[in-house]
Length: 115
Length: 115
View (cartoon, rainbow over the protein chains, first blue to last red):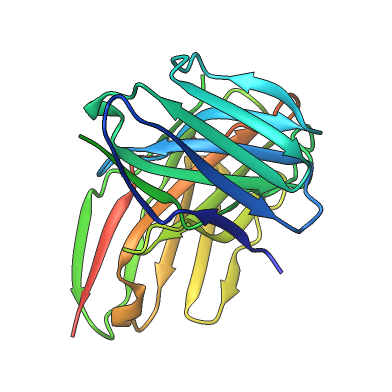
């Protein structure tokens, strides 16, 4: 089973709202990733957690705040977003961040619109 | 520096035609990993294949086949007897050995199969 789930599927929020995206996997993977994908572009890496610790932050603005409560769950807290933050947010997981032969498996994404 | 180029932005063919998606990569590493992902309109990136740099054997999986040629730094993907369900954006990606597994994506090729 290579399933990564994400909720919600769609989210519309105002610039003053606070919302959260949720990602879950039950494959026993120890690395979890957040990507942002704008229309007609490839995914861009935002954050990576390895063994529940933040390992990579690709200079993402602080209005995006990741959290990894346990090895199966990954959240992305959103606050004071801008309209240009509207995008598809993808979660992925892999066995181990430091294992080069590993494969990342992606969830269906949350399509975020910021008004 | 790593780079992946998918020169074909969009391809449109009629159902049952064969179609090849090109992928050219650049890396200074001798050990690296190449991937293909499919992204249907629903948004999820679906893993198709991973190939190690030291394994140049071509691979076939049903109607899908991959041609890896180190001499030309290419990892092309062919769909035989295409079907409407193959319509999607296809991404080629590269990761290098050692360090954190970071995927470098190409810009993607939008494939449309017309009935």
